[in-house]
Image (cartoon, rainbow, N blue to C red):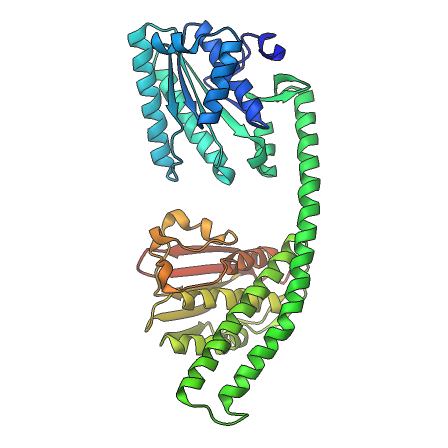
Length: 451
């Protein structure tokens, strides 16, 4: 058995707020070490232990280490002091997750009472949870605290967190907690100790530098490729336009159809390339705005004209309503045009044939308010925040049919949101599945330029 585990036999029981504790692990070896120390402590303390094993490899490793530590796994299983369960499937609904944790603790307490054990402890591995980690940990903590309060037996839940999946934001949030363990200089210690925070900060900074270097390389590659691809692509689009116009002779119906397909595909590809270029610039830290006077009615009309053929192909009506009292505003015209283009294009894309798209603009409490409404597939409330993340589109649960050919990369809304926030504005969505969506964004009218 590893020396650092037996040096403090009551490592987890002595931790503050110990109904729920967390530990960050680097690899399978550290996870094994954690589980052995945790359940060894519980078995020796006469507690009922429910060990949830993430996979067979981990289970075999822990069993082997148990034997090395002088504990007989088979005896613990036979005496019903130890049970082994497979990992619970990931539940995307927080309410269902809370119910599952509640049911888990309820059954554990029943077994604790019926077996006459001194307490109950179990574990849960948060591998694969990514950015959803914090709300799931909070939901789990609430359920565990409620169960501990309602019963007179000790309850301990160990949440294990893989270091490789923790974002910088998650690491900083975790550092503020009082009951999180990490391995430092060969020993498991609480992170709230000063040297623990310093060491985790060092790990975070090193990881940040590595990620930053990788991002610079990736963004540089995307920018170079985008510029190289746009030149021949513009030629494909330009010549397709000329062919359709009959500049080189008339085309028959079949030829016009195929050239039209080439033109549409070329424009779609150019849109994807431009979006990738925009997101690369954002990730590279390009946050400058070039303010000028912008006539909103004129700009909306310009974007409408550029998307009119796309709407006409689907027989979608496009209506524009601009308040006559609306004056010019100070904004970055190119970025504002991109915002409008992405939102209106998105509305057309997700609206079925013979649908309707409406764009309106007005003053509202000192802000410019623009709404882009459609009669499309709609968005479920669970996806309101998700759709503004990169590479995300409405899924099948929100009425999205993968065979419908909506296409795109899922970058348009992400880019629009970033550009709006650069101007000091906000964007949100109001929608109902099957009844369309309204994307609303506001920009300040105080003419204060943000650089």
